[in-house]
Image (cartoon, rainbow, N blue to C red; front, side, top):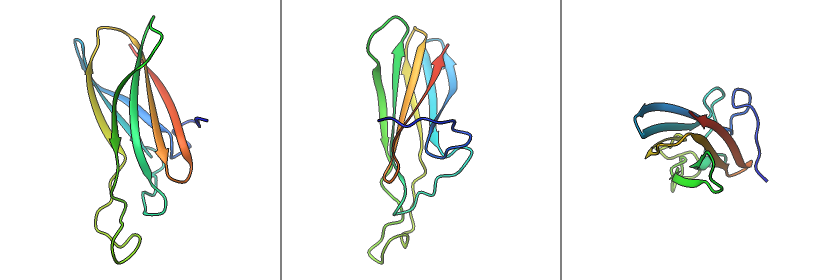
Length: 121
């Protein structure tokens, strides 16, 4: 089951923002924890973000890409003793001449799979 909620009140929901559109080329930023920061600790973190595009009038979405986040403060000294913590922010650039719907997913190791969507005008 995909979980959804307003990203302004829930820290797990992926936020989709169009950064730039030049002709057919689109750059999209997807973040988790935009309004309410996600902890991103060894015990509780966003594992990945993926982005899909469903063009108007088509039946199946295209997978644009996926970003994995693999450093969460792990260390041989123990959890949260490491010096590197990744932030769940990803940029995707693709080309399309169509309008449609962008669909993003994020996965939290504790709270599961989250979904959000935004139109691509």
